[in-house]
Length: 116
Image (tube, rainbow, N blue to C red; front, side, top):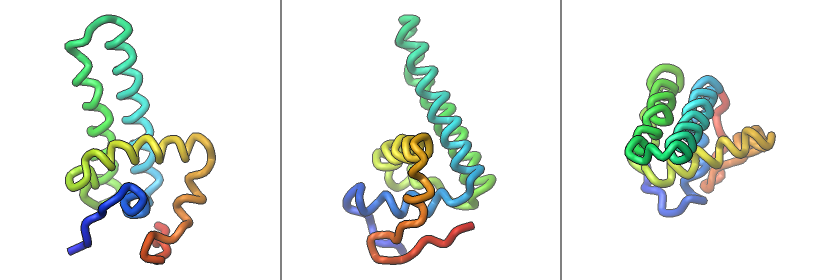
């Protein structure tokens, strides 16, 4: 069994290794952006009671990506808070053009990622 991650710095390379499929990543981006859009819509419209519904597209899109394209179990099942944070970090890296560099880095144990 894999060793438990004790920091986000240690978790981040693992998270990336679970998101090598570009379709899975694209579904994450779509889900995260949709969730943020719904959150803003609900807050601006004063429909506070709907705010929890904003997370549904984020997780739905991501889980379709993992089970349908990546072929692995979402990291959020074991690391829910770090996975939530990492979704936004991955999206930011994608939007700023830094994701390919992040995906090419070795993990904290010095293992190079296996590209799909």
